[in-house]
Length: 240
Length: 306
Image 1 (tube, one colour):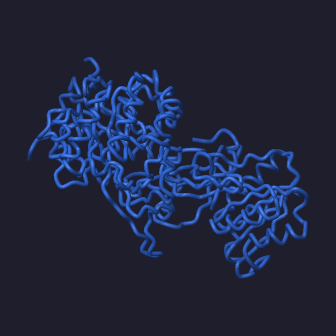
Image 2 (image 1 turned 90 degrees about the vertical axis):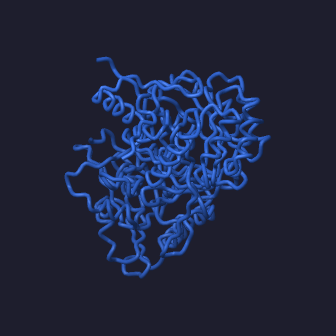
Image 3 (image 1 turned 135 degrees about the vertical axis):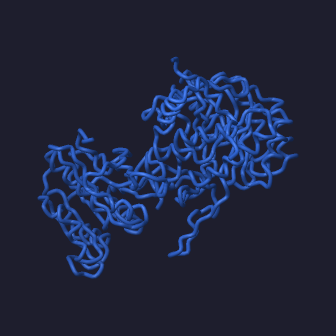
């Protein structure tokens, strides 16, 4: 079934990796990578990390999948912000690509979008193929220095905040591994920048009932659901 | 031919069909309102409530296992006062039966919560959670000893303004003894089974998957255990049994009814397929129709020995 509207970046799809059977039993959450407005087609970009994604990778073109979504709260950013800084680490690339595309589509100037893309090594560059085609300021960071900045993408963010090249009042949006998100959260706090984090969690239900995917609220003895209140949170809201 | 009757009666309460949702898998009902027509359900069993609000255990709280999942949510809930104030109004006039699951750390807590619920006519029945395996001191021991089970059910029954249905644990040597004790203490029905004790460890990073170490195992993996528990229990009690454990579709519903359950609860399946209950109601209706079975009650306890 085609999706009728451009999805909100950061929202996710809950997909049953196997078309039949109970093992694996639960759905897997995937962020939305791209959307084709003429066909209503959605694309996801994922990495095989476990049994679910391994089974999922065996789905052949033309097969019907059981998809629930789009679910959750995505990035809710007005076009009135001055500059948008997207910090992506590996599997965090897709939702931030869609966010850049969505802002461009709504008339936001690409010169005011910076996309800092963190990879392990240059071999992973194909993951960012589509990002490269967008008329935005794209910079790479690799752990081994084989492409762009040598070091973590969070350190690239710090360097660019220091040299002022991200423009005035940059709003930071980050998606990637927990360690990276934590580093970005710390940097955003230190520099006093507005920052949104898109979190990943094991989500049995995806619709807010099982209470399995919770994350701790910052400064409070309270948990919030990644699937329902998130997956995008203001960096000041959550404790990673 | 007229449509088959799906009505069942439990503890004097008539349910429009034998398909309910299990506590802890359906929130407070409102979470599913956008996915299914709640009025079609036989009933909704809401998430365990306790005297005070509980935040629950630190994550990770769940882990998937072979055809099942472990959970150790930790009885996270809003507490009985907020439940009555904020959750009950939604449940009023939904057109389905409302069963409230009550948990506690001691007898006083159960009595306190029930007392707060008494008089709220949105509620049709109380499910007494005396079998949560995930929280130390919460209920579990109440359903592991027949005398203790008898005492708590007797005390709660004494003040409870609703039909009372204790929910039993499978983590016992002989569930029949607990079931009998509950019946003798005045229980109007029995719900079984709660989750099984379980644990999982990652073989690569050696980490125990749940922060709570152990959790409750649910899903299709536990269905045979639940079927056997229902079968055994049905042979020793006269009160109705509500079967729970790994039910995914109408075929599982039929299996539980044949084993002796009067109704069932869908649990983990709600996480996988939000409309699993509605599909099961439709498919059960078709199944009965295609076999010329006029009344769903004709299935109860009819399993044949081979």
